Image (tube, rainbow, N blue to C red):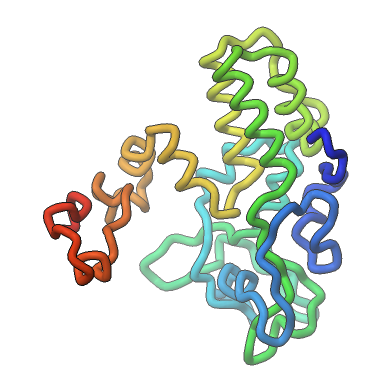
Length: 253
């Protein structure tokens, strides 16, 4: 933070456009070039009734999560694709998006949609879209969380969290006078809203010690989750090299 090299960009939605890749908020990202590049867009692009040129829709989200965002929060529209405008065809609402007949319709992930690329429709369906691994907003969230855990919700914690919050929702600063526990909950919500679909959630709920509860209360994830799955198995190569098989992670023995 003291280096002054990185900073938040003004427009949250612009972070995920190919034209703005590797900007002042991007610290470390997976880089992709065409034609052999990223498949993030086609994996999350919807298909279903009336969509003429859609994607695979293997990655999507839940309406319930979208509805937890305040309508005044710019991250809502940027994170969720609720309709597909496809000139000269129709405009398709997300209620008609469908991966298959067994899954209910749900919004698509908006962060990986960069419309206007001609190659979105080609056979390869790959783009030069980058995938952020670490961006400056996460630095601020780490600062806010660490300050609160070490010193309570002090001025530094509020400043860091409000810098993230007010970029997308300038009329709703973090409420003043929060307790340490309430500020902790607020930070965790900001993690979810700011970094939704950026491959952070699993790591956060694991280190917060709430993974079992979160997964058990998720109508989709709970179907296949078991508590032992919070940890990965030790690779077979380690046992082939002489490691005691009894040391295998519980649940994978």
